[in-house]
Image 1 (cartoon, one colour):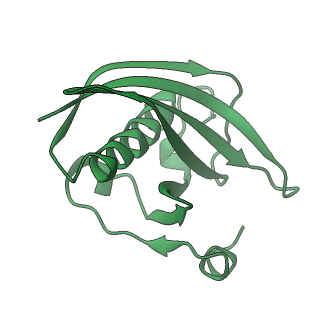
Image 2: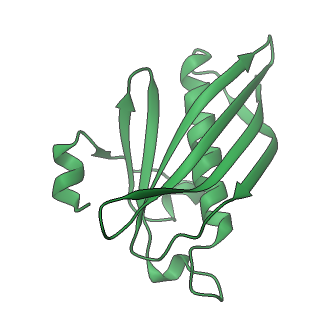
Image 3: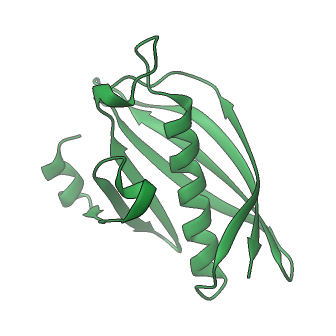
Length: 139
């Protein structure tokens, strides 16, 4: 998917400071009542085997779950208490990663969230490359 196709599909570039901003151009789109995030991977995102590093997949999933929790909980500060990531396939540099989150349960202080990260393949198909679950503390 080219940048023009992302724009036509309703995606917007979201500048971020700090660590998340250092990853590259982050795209976001509101899907129903949730935010989805995307990042086009680059060679610098590869591990020693030449595939996208699991730390990048984890970061994108974590960020997506946190932002969706933040939005749902009245934009209160959120912290990841626990993060579990399962890597189910590899992503290749140059592919677009798309992360989507779901809030599974909410208590007074804790929110339980899950996310999938998919890679958009050269042939236009997409494949889930990571599944994550988090416990998020809301301040």
